[in-house]
Image 1 (cartoon, rainbow, N blue to C red):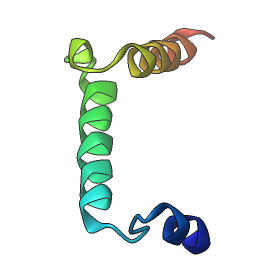
Image 2 (tube, rainbow, N blue to C red):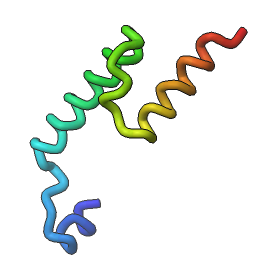
Image 3 (cartoon, rainbow, N blue to C red):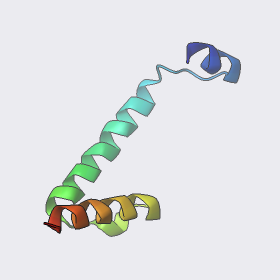
Image 4 (cartoon, rainbow, N blue to C red):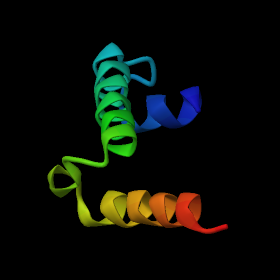
Length: 59
């Protein structure tokens, strides 16, 4: 991973990316728990969340 990042000229230990991931994870968790705010997510994430909810509801 480090070699790829060096070749591509990016920092694999980028703290900004880590913080963004934490923010997105927090938003996703809030939506999963409250079942509100789904419209704020992209289509792929909405589909995954809806599939999760459907799986929770099935016996």
